[in-house]
Amino acid sequence: MISQNLLSYGLIQSALVPFAILLFAFNVASAAERQNCSAVSQQTCDVAHKLGKGINLGNMLDAPREGDWGVNVEPEFFDLVAEKFDTVRIPIRWSNHASTSQLAIIDEAFFQRVEMIIDKYLARERYVIINMHHYNQLFGDKLNPNEFSVDESVVQARFLSMWKQISLRFKDKSDKLIFEILNEPHGKLENRAWYDLMNQALAVIRVENPNRVIMIAPSGNRYESLDELANVLSNGYDKNVILAFHNYAPFPYTHQGTSWMPWFPKGVSCCSPEQKNLMKTQLMKAIDWNKRFGIPVHLGEFGANNQSSDKDRATYNKEVVSLMNRYSVGWTYWELASSFGIYNPKSREWNQLLLDSLLIK
Ligand code: BGC
Image (cartoon, rainbow, N blue to C red; front, side, top):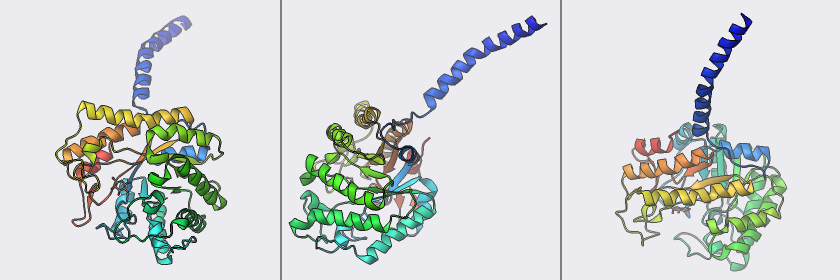
């Protein structure tokens, strides 16, 4: 009896083994791979994985004055975005709303407006990334219409002083609020110059926010400078940072017909095997960097503008999103309601095809 039971047990077991192997293989194939968090705290690792799917409120508070670029932060955006996305990234041009002296006193009405928007999303338990965006003088870039200039000698001091005020004002907010030190450092702020300033800003923010997650960026947002960034950080100490990187490959497709990159003519489609290859190669550089250095990464911007067909844009989105999801890399699509947008603020409608292409599992 016993031996018969054992025998049938054994038979069932052996019949189940291939099934179990199949199940295991399926799970491994479909489960997302977690990021390497060996150089950061558990809290930061968790945040990086929870950022999930997100979107930028682009061209709103990053315009010289809100509304200058045709879109405002509308009250309807709070529920709308929170219903679909885990994270909202709010690009902000603080520099044009602060006094011209080195103290850069931030205009109170503007501060209140930003705080109200942050609070709306935090109340909806969403992650909120705020940054310093388009401080053009910091880079030596041409200024935009309606952007004022300040004395060259105070440009960097203003940057640090604005962070001091922001970090003090928001120090008691939920830890779902994340500070991103600077969008796409470039120009005058390449390499050493950027890393020096980045470390100074980190130190300023850490006075009031010792554990808040802070997003840092490589110089020029270039993949080539990622290793250099790792060297800078390995001398450092901070366990609560995430690396933000951007990817618009292939540029001739994503930026065709834009006024700021007029050298990319209209009429480029997406996505050929070569284009897919390029996208994957670029994105994998950030993923490989994470594996080597143990600092989680986040794709802060990607997107294609409305000069190309919705069908192609949806294909492009799915390509990027599926890769990021597979490696548990959070992303924030560029952007909600302007020329790269997926929502029409006039008709108050989502572009369903594009929205669905971002929300794929
Ligand atoms: C810039 C935007 C631009 C987008 C795509 C962002 O970082 O701030 O002005 O539309 O990149 O080029």
